[in-house]
Length: 77
Image (cartoon, rainbow, N blue to C red; front, top):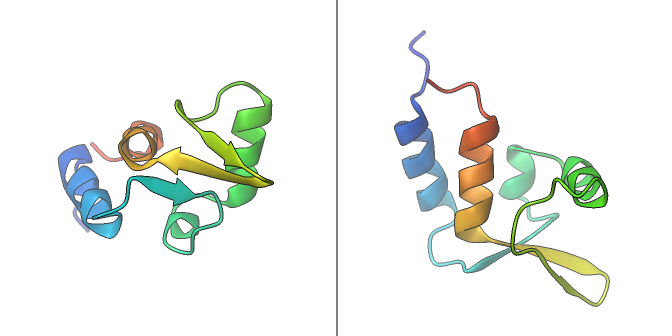
């Protein structure tokens, strides 16, 4: 099986989050790639996604920064 490249993954994620500026930590599309708990742990360890916004008790991430982090953490070539 051919492994996805980072460029292909980025395009896929951009399509998945198309039209969104902010993405909720427990968004069903996002949690297909990374769990909300992992994101919360990153935040508490100060390794979170840059630009995170907390509204009430909910955390949102800028879509472009989120995509960058997912591509960076992937094993895509």
